[in-house]
Image (cartoon, rainbow over all chains, first blue to last red; front, side):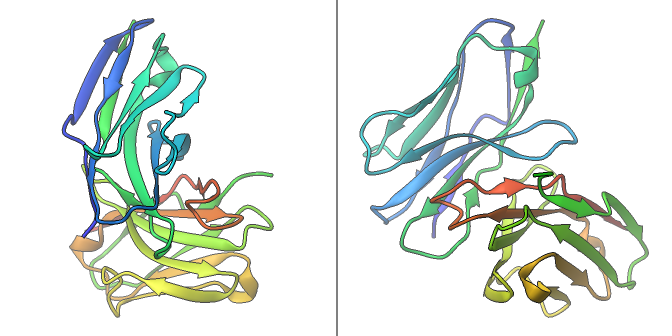
Length: 115
Length: 115
C-alpha cells in the first residue's frame, strides 16, 4: 500500500524566516509524482509545487523549493522568506503515473507564521 | 474561469436522513474527483469521473454513497441514511487531464455534520 507520512502536525516560523516541512512516502513504484498542496483556512486547496520522480533536479517555485531524496523516499518543502499569507495546512501527496487516478495525501502540517 | 464550485458549503443533517452535494467543475475539465477529509486527516479518494463515466470507486464508498455526473458536467454525491461517521468535509476537484500529469483544482468543500 502507498502511504504518505508527515511527522510534523504543527510548525511555526517567524515572518521572513525559512521553514522546512517534512514528508516521507512508501511505495514500490518507480514512476510517480509528488506534490505539496496548501489549504488556507476556509479556502480551497491549491497546488504549491510538483516533482516528477524521474527528475533528479529539485523543483522550485519562487519562494518554495523541495528537497527530493528518491532513495530515502523523502520529499521536504522549504519555504523561504515566510509571509503571513503562507499560514495554512500543507499536505504532501503522491500519485502513480501508471496506476489509478487517486492522489494519496499525508495527514498535513499546520504552519503558523509569527509576525 | 470561476474555479470549482461546491454547494452547499455547510450541511447539518439528522442521522438517517439523505443528503446530496453538488460540484460544478471548471468548464472543459473532463475529469472530476470526490475526496473526503475528516478532522486531522488528509483528503481520501472516494471516486472519479472521466466525462460522464464513473471509472473508479474507493472501498470507502459504501453502498449508501452514490455519485453521478450526467452529461459530463456537474456532479452530485448523495449519501443515504447518514451516520455520524459520515461527518466530514467533502471535496471536489477537477482537472483537464490525469490528476498527476496536470493540475487538479479543488473546490472549497462541503462540510457535513451529522447529528
